[in-house]
Amino acid sequence: MSSSKGAITMKQAIFDLLPPASVAGILVLWAVVPPWFVDQPWSLVVVTCASLAFVQLLEFIHERHPGWRINRQEILTDVFYVVLGSTVIQWLTTKLAEDPLTALKHSLGIATPWVAHLPYLVQVSFVILLFEFGQYWMHRLMHNQAFFWSTHAPHHHLTQLNAMKGYVGNPLELFLISLGVIALFDFQPVAVFAAFSVTGIVSIFAHANVRADPPRWYSFIFTTIRHHSLHHTALSYEDTRCNYGCSIILFDRIFGTYRDGESEIVGQDERVRLSIRQQFLFPLRPLLAMIHAKRQTAAPHSG
Ligand SMILES: [Zn+2]
Ligand SMILES: [Zn+2]
Image (cartoon, rainbow, N blue to C red; front, top):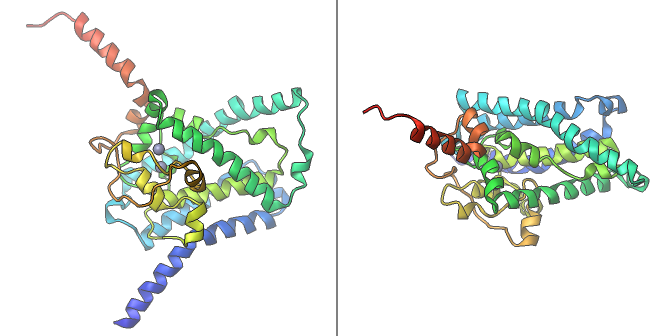
């Protein structure tokens, strides 16, 4: 009896260490991979997919809530958004944001060669903080302005959390949240990839149905499922206006939006699960309602 209890405690202790161990593992991985791997256009996608597969697997070994258990419909939707994010959204971000920003940087003669000479971990930390700072304010804006909220609301209509759920949302929101100013700096590509892999795995764990509660030092800096499930709470819209940091909860602590706790019941309004079509059309709802109302008044009454 006591040995099985000991095994449970041991299992929990191991799971609690998995988020920080994964962050450390990713930092080491990018530090030791050969340059040819870094040069591949698919290298970051491969690491992201491996991270997703790893955490999704953990959901089957030690789930957090039975009510969040993944099913066929959820996994198909999630995979659709992972593919959308790493193809169309990534392409749009490159073409509409990063390339113009790089061109602007060159035309203005901005150069930061010193950045590439900083130690690897300093560069990675710099990229993470710079990018997450932007994400924090973009996310906060989305919870404070009606149109931006309409793009972000589909993500909050999720009725359960799983490893890939961070990728699920209206395409416009996915594009907006991917914007950053990293292209203005001359970081080494390996540091940028390591940074995005770190924020990736943190955000994956922060959405996953895994019973892992990392140590205090980790949850002081990084967002955990406790913080982020509270951000997804079904309690009320007002209650979601906290813990905006997608990967770095430290910004919420600094800017006064941090709240402790967690939520098992997640979702918006009536907790209705949206289809992909509904998620895509969500920001257009006022417009569609107007068109519908016009048609109703224009249509002849049929008795
Ligand atoms: Zn939100
Ligand atoms: Zn989320």
